[in-house]
Amino acid sequence: MLKIYKAFPGGKHKVLTMSYDDGKLDDRKLVSIFNKYGIRGTFNLNSGLVDQDIRINPDEWVDLYKGHEVATHTVTHPTIDRCPTIEIVQEILDDRKFLEQIMGYPVRGHAYPNGSYSPRVERILKDLGIKYARIVGDEYAATYLAKQVQADTNFQILGDSNGYAFPTNLYEWKATCHHNHNLLGFGNDFKDLKKKQYLYMMYVWGHSFEFTRDNNWNVIEEFCQTMADSDDIWFATNIEIVDYMETYDKLQFAADLSFVYNPSFASAWIIINDDKVVEIKGGELRELSY
Image 1 (cartoon, helix red, strand yellow):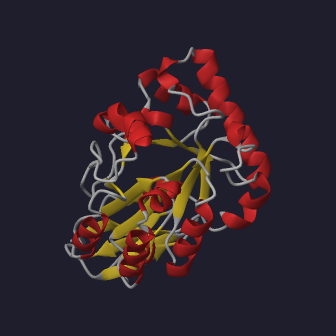
Image 2 (cartoon, one colour):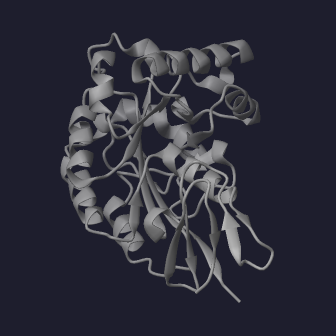
């Protein structure tokens, strides 16, 4: 009998993704580091704050974020669960419309500003075509504003998952860690995960201006350099992970596992009996054997 496991593109069993908020000028340096090492990320932007001198002008977005994902972060960055429902709709939908006009593709991701969310906000996001949303954890949300005021570089980021599992609710997608919370330690542990019967995800989040503020650009440079030489890690944006998991979940296997049909346009990968990597291309009906 065949034993079949889900795999990431190329048969890999680990994925690394990054998520950075606010679209400030420091994104230029961060994107250049990501591009240097082949790291992929999602950048969450506020369309109503682009006139500020500290933010990237929309004229730069297409070129700067090429190869990465742009996602919503609301128009004006409110603590959104305190807002009336109609305001939440406007903040998210208007932000999405603006970003799509600039980027030229459907924008389907979100990061909650100030970590504010609730079941009500989650339902609104789903109705507005948003496929996932990143949270930061209750502890971080409660201390975020104080941290920004105090700029305490010794503050320990709390509320992240500190693990490598996938979310059970994509509208409460919690990161592994903030980049100021033992990033290199988590990265080395992630690289050492070798059991291919599991799928692992490392998810890093933050704000690019924090590297300048904390004078620790060396941390993200070292992390990206360390990750780049790993041949068992898929480097992906947030939405690419969501889309790939949906593609895989649509695979239609025969009851005896003798064949599989992929009704999607994109490819999906499986591993048979622990070591045979098989790509099932979009629209393909493929016989399975070892």
